[in-house]
Amino acid sequence: MSLEQIKASSGLLRGSIGEELDDGGDQFAKDTTQLLKFHGIYQQDDRDVRRERGRLGLGKDFSCMVRASIPGGALTGEQYLVMDRLADAVGNGTLRITTRQGLQYHFVRKGDLRGLVRALNDELVTTLAACGDVARNVMGCPAPLRDRVSAQVTASAIELGRHLRPQTQAYWQLWVDGERAASLVAEDGDGTDEPLYGPTYLPRKFKVGFAFPGDNCVDAYTHDIGIVPSVAGGEVVGYTLIVGGGLGMSHNKPSTYPRLGDPVGVVAPRDLIATVKAVIGIQRDHGDREDRKHARMKYLVAEWGIDAFRTELERRLGWPLARPGPLAWPHTSDHLGWHGQGDGRAFLGLAIPSGRIQDNGAGYRSAIREAVEQFGSNVRLTPRQDLLLTDVAEADRSGVEELVRAHGVPLAERLAPSVRAAMACPALPTCGLALTEAERVMPVLIEGFQAELEQLGLGDEAIHLRMAGCPNGCSRPYSTEIGIVGRGKNHYNVFLGGDAHGTRLNTPFADRVAFNELLDVLRPVLTFYRVERLSGERFGDFCARIGPEVLRIRGQEMPQPVAG
Ligand code: SRM
Ligand code: SF4
Image (cartoon, rainbow, N blue to C red; front, side, top):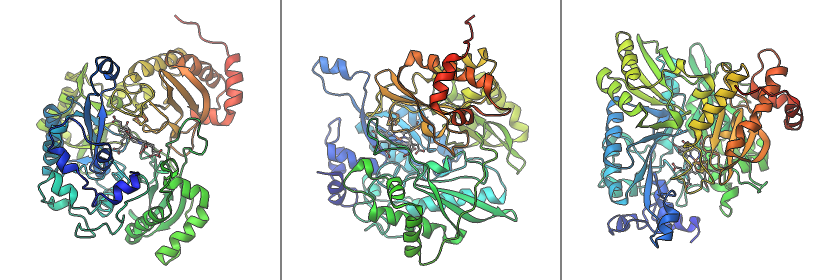
């Protein structure tokens, strides 16, 4: 069956999930795995042991990745502690912060799924629509500032997320014994149909994120809909909608490509939800349902052009959209370190390597858990896979710092800027699409990269590097200064020239570079940059100004530093 047929015949995402949960086996049928995604669950297998098990005539070692959808990445301390405890009960003892402010459990056995999803729902944390052909977790700038604008942006992200959630009863019946958690009851229906999505949901995944005015930490141009508030008199007076972003592509398939969205119009706060739904309606009705490699809304926007897209949107809305003005991003922030919240309390942003919360070397898991337990902090997850301990009383600052240090967790100011900016996707051994490693080799890569920078006298420069195990781009490697993208076993393509504010895509620079030659490829360009950059020019801007051809030739002409 095609995925469209699977969705259509599933009875609003029910299929045979219930029967298969009870069948005592270790895996789900192929069609069921497609439906499970809408419930936040991916069937995977441990790729580290695939070959050996095959040699022994054993089947794959199946388990599941379970993704919680957390609007704006905001969790109460109590919710976080339950999620932390569950990581001991199921999976591999880690929690993985995602690039969309979700939290993932890996290696969850089929028999543990019901207990895990129910326990999350007991804490009002849902996995519904964390994956699948629906609007996913609505992102939002995580800084917990207590001014009116921040409060409006966070509240809008949460409210919009509720309106976009699927209405199906299947989720509640399968996982939560038919009872719908009170705060999660969807806004727009009774659960017996899908007024927004229809029975076949969307042609493909759909992503929405709210930036904070002037701060593009959510990478607003990479979403199907990026939402940028405009502020006057200390409050949000409108939202610019950017439509048609998306990063996934396939090597050797030029018809697939990363794309940054285009601003389509400005709407008043009261019209935001209707307008977002109207955009989703366009993708639902016109998105490609034949070819999943061509099904994201970015292709619709690219092929229609933004003017035709706006015309259709205005037709559906019945009113003209105000034209967008220029957007400025003066201070895109990683939100790490100490910051005041504006309410007499403070938050501490901790850099979590590749978002993996674990006790391995440094005690990230213990430090965060104990800080929440002892100081009553709440938690925010950031779009860069980091974590903020929020609502810390001024008097507790030194206590929190001591605790974090005692677990060997470095404070952000002790990390080099490039190290704290680095991101990698999970890749091997869990991701079924990975062509090669990412998260597991990032520590070696970023340490070597930082050593190169220091040798060149660039150690204090914030040069943003993101790595992905395949071209799907889950760590958003194309909207940053250096993208390292899996090409094949142990080989990567290198992209250069994006900017640190996510407003420009990078472009291909080198193909099929072996992992241990990546620094050899970057070193000449970094040397060229050191010698010829303009005053204050960032690395990505330099690479974009010079262009890949000249970078390649001139980089090779540069005298290289002598080791030692
Ligand atoms: Fe992703 C598929 C992990 C953010 C583009 N992504 C996957 C799967 C589920 C693999 C699969 O389909 O079998 C990965 C699971 C790996 C694992 O073991 O955990 C996976 N994606 C992730 C996460 C966990 C990466 C991370 O380092 O945090 C992120 C989860 C976010 C969340 O909480 O929802 C994640 N994925 C992204 C992003 C970034 C973003 O959304 O800001 C992108 C690029 C933006 C975009 O969507 O265009 C992204 N993931 C993809 C794609 C390519 C989509 C496309 O349009 O071509 C796939 C493959 C697919 O959908 O067919 C994919
Ligand atoms: Fe998997 Fe590729 Fe996404 Fe990495 S970028 S998590 S390898 S799909």
